[in-house]
Length: 368
Ligand SMILES: Nc1ncnc2c1ncn2[C@@H]1O[C@H](COP(=O)(O)OP(=O)(O)OP(=O)(O)O)[C@@H](O)[C@H]1O
Ligand SMILES: [Mg+2]
Image (cartoon, rainbow, N blue to C red; front, side, top):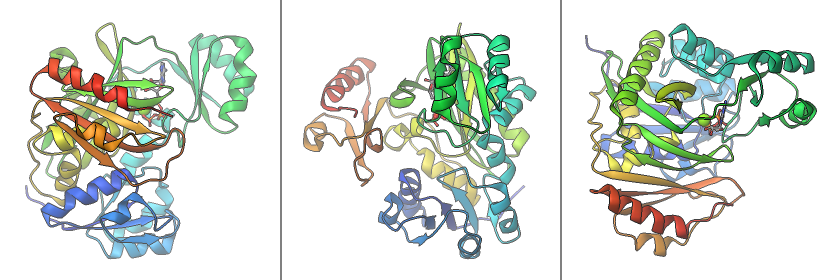
């Protein structure tokens, strides 16, 4: 089966993910156009930006009419805003794939239907639901907003019944989910790409270290045959079910040597930034290849990598650059506490050397 090959990509959102997509597009000869709320966004460094609301019907129409395929740096655009565009252009990943990953409850329902394990959970719309959910799921648990959460925002760990009011006050009113707090041994993610003809490519697992709900650093490849096989199997199920086109990420908790799905992202992902410097083909290039109908590139790792996020404050660039095998990425954003401003990736041929360089780099990076 063959499909059309595209070379004009519209990207909703022009943050750092959009910017790195735009960077990967240049050598492919693919042209990008962004839509974002401001002209002063990371993507603006690499491609033009239409400025306005991300759900502005007129601007979305303009974006769609100037591109062969529409894709996303930000996956929360509503299905209603996307529906009228489907007649104008290809949308990859599809509206259905976006909808499934916008709501933690729908996402868990999808995983469960596909026999992918998830944490025990319950929907919560008010205080009495929360009391019932705690009764059913147990303590401790995490109360989360069902939509629009990122970097651990909109979450509260409920350790005892007396925390209920503080949890509701913190997370706010609206549709919520209460899930069992899992004492996992580690967190890993898998990133894969699926082309329009069904061809798939999977990256090695990344082992992710979070603190305060935000990814701090990741180590890849995380070689564990059992987990890798399981993760690929689960990802294939999701991709096939959604007839997915593009890069997809699934984050997992590891408990007793088995995977429990946490969430998925219908896009390139922070835990895959290591693939820019650490793989033959980056997640960004493979996303473009997939959505444009080009053959997928090799996901082979070039060595042992560590990817470290710059959060809140940019580190001393020159001191980091003095570390052998380190690649530096500055997103060009204004500093703000907790904000992802950039990252660096260390690539080494031996684990021991990677770990030593990681330690040196961590000494120079301060998360604020
Ligand atoms: N049920 C849970 N049990 C234990 N820890 C959890 C649970 N849910 C979330 N966490 C911790 O909080 C982190 C962020 O949670 P989650 O991935 O649900 O949020 P997010 O805000 O969508 O994050 P992201 O930045 O990945 O979009 C997880 O990576 C994990 O470290
Ligand atoms: Mg997450």
